[in-house]
Length: 150
Image (cartoon, rainbow, N blue to C red):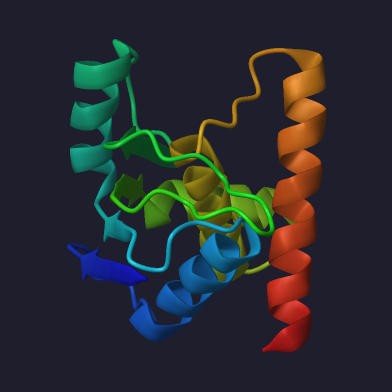
């Protein structure tokens, strides 16, 4: 698993922790061990530009995912396809506000957003109630298991 972490903000980011989380999630979902993922932390201004350009929505958002090879989760006993998973862009400023409202740390929020972004790259969505239920349950399970084991 190759995870590239880039921090273009003044926020303190532990790249090793985010890379470990990505590795864990991708292993749990049986993604090819040579899959590539990029995680980028950007300012609210940069995120607002991306949000408007790609989603036609104003203002910054917490996380955006840009899939590349449309990889999907594998299954036990199946050989998954290798490739480039894609890019996840996270805005620590938005994450900090969401963390404050949720009553946990900014790091925990950004870890949650990382899992959320990976699931989007793997084809999960939350547009419909059933999809949301499935995606959010998996997101919670993956993050809690990772946190319990670190």
